[in-house]
Every structure is written in structure tokens, then in C-alpha cells.
Image (cartoon, rainbow, N blue to C red; front, side, top):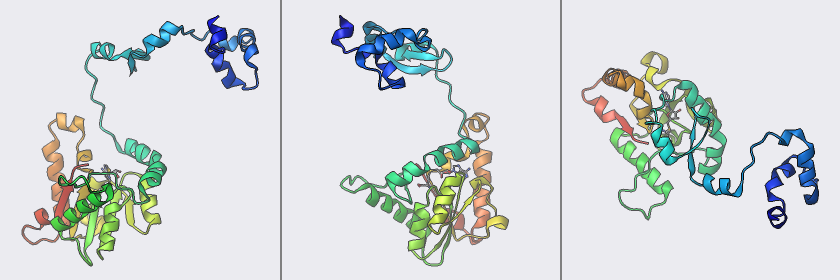
Length: 254
Ligand SMILES: C[S@@+](CC[C@H](N)C(=O)[O-])C[C@H]1O[C@@H](n2cnc3c(N)ncnc32)[C@H](O)[C@@H]1O
């Protein structure tokens, strides 16, 4: 009776294998094909109860409720994304981000300063103006962008008459930037040296700072060593005059 009134909706999956089977033959097709015989059958009640299932438990290989997930213990903090993860993630989303946010996709913070009448683009331009104020981006300045993404800051530097150089760990981002005439390298930001890239007038980093020290490295108490090493390398890229490192290195959150 239920089957009749629901138009055989419980056998709808058979349609996915062959859309040409008429509705009144779905049951026969189901019964005659062994592929369907050991799949679990869900009752209406199973469907109602499934609404409570919110989390995928990888260890048990099944969906669980929020309470069931909590009972299984605290969620382990995932190891930080490594070079391969960054390459995979940013290269996988490359096309969709450029299609949705524009070729020079800016996907880090925006600076509203409480004025939410601003559009996202205006607030992101304010962010770049803020970075420019902090480090003095101007004509003929050579600026390094650590973790440059799809190059929005490098494009801003170019429009101000400067020369931007970017590094990223995503080959798709590097390729997209190069297609737009930006000088971008597939290179680890923590390993940029004066020997390999030459000197810079300013160094910026927008939304990538947190990538430079992993959770594991932090737990091992290595954060000071890692960030001091990074600051020392950045300082070695900048002009030597006193105070230049603070004035010409700018970092911001995602
Ligand atoms: C959240 S995105 C920010 C991108 C860009 N700065 C923006 O504002 O749109 C982080 C970027 O940092 C890069 N990145 C992360 N760790 C890196 C590393 N060790 N060396 C170079 N780039 C890195 C990623 O490839 C990605 O392009």
C-alpha cells in the first residue's frame, strides 16, 4: 500500500542504474538483480531517526549523533597542513576560487573598521592600503609577499608602481599569477634567502603567518625558534638601516 502511494520511491535507486525501467517494473528489476540483494533496507522509521545523525565517525565507519561523537572522546587535532596538503587544497580549489572571486582572488581578511556599508572589495582594498601605509609600498619598491595566494597584494603593488615578488606552495596559484604577469614562485616562504631572491624594500604576509608553525611544532615548544628564524631571514632580505625590519615587515591574519 505504502509502495503504491509513494510511487515506488523506496525503489528509486533502481532508476539511477537505468532510467528507462518503467515505474511498475522497478520491483521486478530489483528482485531479479543480485546487485540489490545485500544492500541495507531503510524503513520510514530509519529515515526519521537518521535526521539525528550529524557526524561521520571515521573509526567506526558510520554516521553518529552529536552526543555519540562527543562520547567517543575529544576530536584529535589534525596535523597541520604540510606542503602536499597545501598543494592539493589550493590547486584543487583554484578554478572555483578564480571563477567566484575573480582571477586575482583575495581570500583573506577585509578591513571594515566598523563600517559595514563597505563592499567586500572596498574593505579588502582598505586592507591593502593599510599594508602599504605600514611598509611604505610605492613606486619602484621591490616587495616580497610571503604566501601570496592568487596575487591580490602583488597586483596592488604593481598598480602603485612597485615590483612585487610572491611565493606560494600551490603550483596552480603560481601558474594563475604568472598568467597575469605577476612574478610568483613555487617556494617555501620560510626558505627565502637574499642569495636566491635578492634584496627587498619591504616584506608582507597576509593570512599565511599561521601556516609557518605547525601544531606539532608548537606542542614541541619550537614556536619561538621557528618565528625567530623567520624574522631573522626576513631581516636579512631588507635594507640594513636601523629599525627597518619593524617598519618594513607587515603581517596580518586571515
Ligand atoms: C589564506 S592564503 C592567503 C593568500 C593571500 N595572501 C591573500 O591574502 O589572499 C595562504 C597562502 O599561504 C600559502 N602558504 C602557506 N604556507 C606557505 C609556505 N610555507 N610557503 C609559501 N606559501 C605558503 C598558501 O599556498 C596560500 O597561498
